Length: 106
Image (cartoon, rainbow, N blue to C red; front, side, top):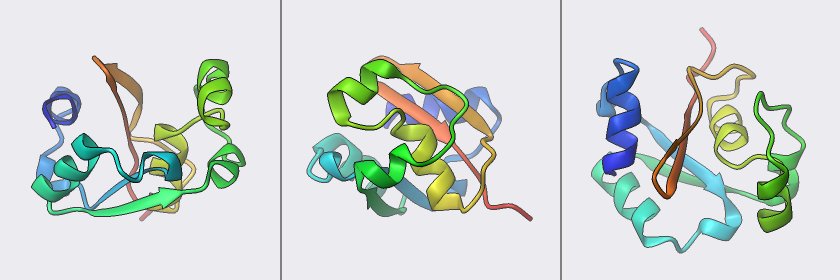
């Protein structure tokens, strides 16, 4: 949660604006992610790796592709959850946590 707050604060975004925490299906049981969603009072969405891999993202990663099976987790999940192809915050690594932020198109 500290990493999420740091990323949001650095971009002038309030934690209260987070409505969904989205990630890959493989992270469904990750305790830190579940605690962060609860603390944010946010819904959670877990996407299959194939669905994430189909999203065109600004910063794909071959390392993530090898480890998880998709070229992106945080950017693709954020864009899918928001129903947009634009990010407010591109992939940002904060210690062991990677965060991206998208908002629904107006």
